[in-house]
Every structure is written in structure tokens, then in C-alpha cells.
Image 1 (tube, helix red, strand yellow):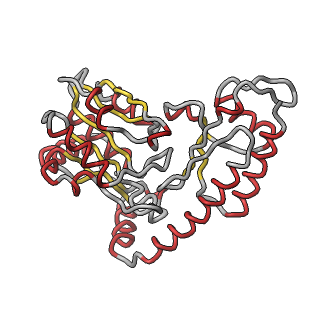
Image 2 (cartoon, helix red, strand yellow; image 1 turned 90 degrees about the vertical axis):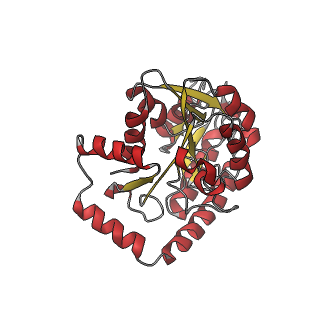
Image 3 (cartoon, one colour; image 1 turned 120 degrees about the vertical axis):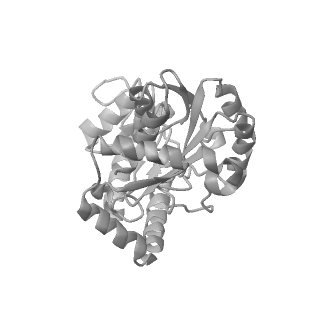
Length: 302
């Protein structure tokens, strides 16, 4: 099954109506809707840029209620590229130990793409929480197999059995061709991962440097994945050359698309404004061209 299906099956198998799922934001766009589709209530906790877009222990503590069932963690993160350190996860684990009814859904799909720090995941750094943790991963990112739709989850046996039951009564299984391709990816040589990470690091540094040259944009350096999440607060309130007012990050994204043929995703889709998400999973040439257009677009605002 696809990694996203793993997450959905876990929520569908475990949530009673009205049970809550704590979701740090910015977050992947599907998380809140998957919780709602499973009958749960998404509890969004804003994580500011000053703290690296990462959930802090006091934020987690404040969000937990008797109805909380899951904490969802995505590290490295889509859309921000934020990576939780071992120490940061251990600090969250201290809170979780006080609330034995809360489980952890750890979406580690970008595990192999970290740049400035070692990867850490809750089940490894806090073994006493292992039976409360579902770890999700797949071959989509580090093995460049996005279209093959292969993901997997590891966690408590009862949960895995319930997830398998749901899978068997919905889309059944991932195609056999995809499964055999995934076996080759996971059991074959892994030298390509270092090559991928090195290429992404070069692209990241290029994009961050260029975006920080754009008037009105501010881009922090992400520690993982292949996205940057720059603030566009500095362009809000400005006008385009044809007089349109930029009021939101969506307005800015549409301006880039319509006037400069550059596609970005508004931060509002990830529950965070005013930001935009840019993927650097492209060639250096294309990224250079796109960033130069963004710089020009910002310079044309008044």
C-alpha cells in the first residue's frame, strides 16, 4: 500500500468518533482530512519558525486531553524540511509518558534525506514507547519510486492486524509488480542514497541562497526532505505591476504562476501563512531559472 494509505488505515482502524489527533503545523495537507474522514478530530498545534517549525513539549502538553488518541510526527517534514533531533524527541517522550493513552504516528518517509543532523525516530530513542508507536516509511522518496505506491508500517501487532483487515476490504493490496520492485530497492545496493542526498544538498543551498536575495522573502535552511518553506510576509500588502494587491500567500503564488510561470504551493494549504513551499527535486538549471524569476517577480512589486 502507499505510505499515505498506511497512515489512513491506522487512523481508520483506531479512532472512535470524536477522538483527537494532535498535528503539529505546518503539516502535510492530507493529515487533518484523513483524521476527519476516520471520524476523529484534528487538533492543530502551530509550530513557529523561530523554533524551527517543530513541536515543543509545552505545546504538546497543552494540546493533550482525555480524548487524545494520536500524536502525528513527520520528520523530516513536508513542507518545512524540519528534522527532530534525538534530544527533541526525548523531550516529547517525557510528556507522552505522563499520558499513557496517547499513541505516536511517526511518518518517516524522508528518513534518508537529512543534511545537517542524524536521523532519529521515536520508537528508537524511546523504546518504552514502542508499543504505542506506529512507524511509517516507504520507497517513494529515497528510492525515487513515488509512482510505485509502496509504503509500510511497523507497530503493535493488534494495530497492524486491524490495518491489514481494512486494507483487505478496500484496495486489497499494492500490485505485485510494485512489491517486487520494492524488494529490489530495499535489498539491493544503497549507494544511490548518498548520491541523492549530496545532489539535494547542493540544490537546497542554491535555492536558499537565491530566495534570500528576493526582496520580501526570508528562507531558513531546512535540515531534511527536499523542500524549502520561505516566508513571504514581506510581499504582503504590495501590488503587482498591473495593480493587483497581494493580500495572502495564495495571491503571491498565483502572481508567480500567472506573470512569471513559476509554480509554488501556498503555505495556507499546509496550515501556515504567509509562506510558500518550493520543491528542489529538480535540476540545478531549472531551479536557477525559477529562483531568478522569483527574484524578478519580487523586484517588480511596489
